[in-house]
Structures are given as C-alpha cells and as structure tokens.
Image (cartoon, rainbow, N blue to C red; front, side):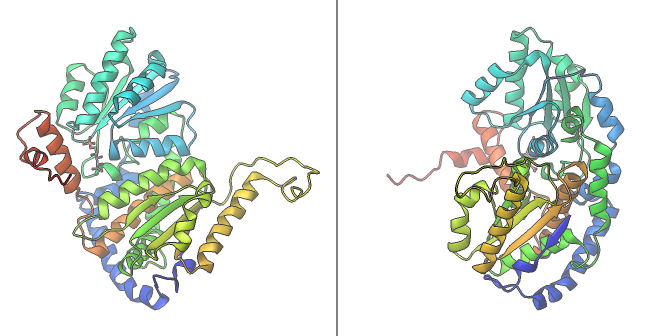
Length: 426
Ligand code: PA5
C-alpha cells in the first residue's frame, strides 16, 4: 500500500511537516504498545497477527463440501458481514454474494424470493452468537429453505464464538462450524474465519490475500515515515485534532464501494469514543465528483478526503468517433479517463487547499486487497493509540443491542427501560 501525504500538508485545516516530525515520537511509542499487544495476543491487537495465525487450509476445507454453489448468502451484521462483502466485491468472486444484515422485512422477503436457495450456501456469522438481527434472519432463511424443500443443514456454514445461541444451534444440528479467533473484534475480522470462507467459495487465493496483509504488517515500524499504515493513521489523527472532523473516503474503483463501507465501520466504531473521533463519509469516484465533491471542496473546512485507487486496472477501449468535440475521448480508454478524473479531483481539492491523502495499491487483486485491509486496520489502531481511546470496544453499539433485546423480551436489560422515556416536543 502506498500513502502520499503531500496534499495533506499546509492545507486548511493546517498540518505541517514539522508537526508530523513531532508526532513521530508518539508514533514510536504507539508502535511499541502495538508490538507488545501483538506479542501477548491481547484483545484487539491479536487482529494484527491474523496473517500468521489464520489457517487458510482449514477455511478451504470448511467450504470444500459445498460443490459448485451459484450463490453465497452471508447472514451477519456489522463486522460479521462487511468484511465478506468487501472481499466478495473486490475480488470479483466466481459466484454471486448477498448479505442479510438488516431486518427490513420487505428486503428479506424479496431477497429470499429471488435466491436460488437449493444452490445457495448460507454462511451465518456472529461472534457473540446472540445478535438479534442475525439470529432472526437465520431463522427466516432456514424456514424458507425448508419450504423450498432444501435441506438447510447441508447448505449452512457457521462462524461463531465458543459460546452463545448460534454455537448451540450449530452443535444441535451438527453444522460445520468455524471459530471466530480469540481477541479479534468484529470490525477487525475480515482476514479471519469471519470473511475468508466467502472469499474461498468465490475462488480467491487466500494465501496471496494473507501474503498482502503480511507484507503490510512487515512494514510497521517505529516511524510514520517508514510505515504507510501509521502515516495514514497519524495524519488522520493530526488533521482531526486540527479540525478535520470528517474523513471522506473515495475509492476510484466500483469494486471498492463496500471497502468504503467497511472502512466507515472500522473508523467510526473504533475511534468514536470519549468525545473524539473522525466521522467517516463514503463516496465513490468518479460518480460522487458530480455530487459530494462540491461540498468537500467548497463547504465547511472540516474535512479530509482520502482518495483510493489501484495503479493498474483492467481496461476498456473507447471507440474512435468523428463526432465534433468527442475526438479527445475516441481511441482512449475508460481506465485513462477514470485516472484523469482521480487526478482532477485531487488537484481540485489541492487548489482549494483542502487536505487530501492518496492511497494506492498495485492492483485490486488478492495481494492489493490484503495490503489495503490490513493497512487500514493498522492505521486505525495507530490513530486509537494516539487519541488514547479504547479502539477495540464498542459500548454504544452494545447498549443498543441490549436495549433491543430487552424490549423484545430477550432478557432483563435496564437499557430497555430508557426506550420508553423518549421526550416528546410536538
Ligand atoms: O465490530 C463489532 O464488534 C460489531 O460491529 C459486531 O461485529 C456486530 O455488532 C455483530 O456482532 P456479532 O458478531 O456478535 O453478531
């Protein structure tokens, strides 16, 4: 992964090279803490060891018995769904990938009506094994399969923690089940049993994906000037402290649209603590050049824009034309056009002194995606260390989960009582 901070300096909010030099001492301390956490496989830090601790053979074996599925359906939510969606979309899986994360009944019904259930592998994922949305959706999927005369026990793979309702369900029906690795929070689990089964089903090369992640891990060092992931995390932190409360992540690749969503979860749920944090915004180049870019360039000076692209991509030639005014396009290519749009956006932001950071990988393939996911996770951990927040907890998310369960009679949770106390004005 390549990170270019050039356009993040001397813009508005203003970050200087001298400030980065000073911050580098704190990055060295952060790196020491991260290295110690990794050494002891402490909660959260263990995620940065996944390139070496995950067993790709076990993951390949777990999906080997599902012969030639037409589709895979991930039933999970948050960190238990977005990693799989990111990998499936970015690596152009050989089979269609769907997610059931939300419990909007209209959506669930229409998705289940359209899926070839007999040819679909269902991957149910919940670290806690208790998340209401995931378990409810799975019960609905199971029943739909029953009604369609499909033996759901033959089509289901489970990934969950050691305990919880999902583990008990898997045991009762003797379903193949993978363990969520210890110490790996949901949003840091893309490179584990949580998301890799979907990549394996789609034919992705897991070894190469992990090799990409490992390469990024090997670049972590005590200086942000040597470690691209820390450079990004530290610059985001420093810019946020100076007023860039929003980080708009704008990949110039359709296949990275879910990556932006995955990133948004990683950033928001990990760093939004103790009244600090940087709000992630999602955009897609070049599409959002025609909408959100107006705000990024000319709106409030509270933003950083992160532009992401591959250095090489498959291309489509643009046919020659003798139409007046179009000859500059004819004979060119869509890749060249998209890259020109990327560079135009970057220059436009720079001309208006809006901080922006360029992130590139060589290609959107297993190696590039492994680098990108690992690099962003390490950046996030570095930011969390600098900000002094508990990167690996999500108390606000847990609060909502308990309140919803309590409301539905799923246990005695005091949070549920607050739901009836809503203040009304009109
Ligand atoms: O990152 C997280 O911890 C959360 O987004 C969880 O992944 C999400 O709430 C789902 O939890 P679980 O995997 O326990 O069902």
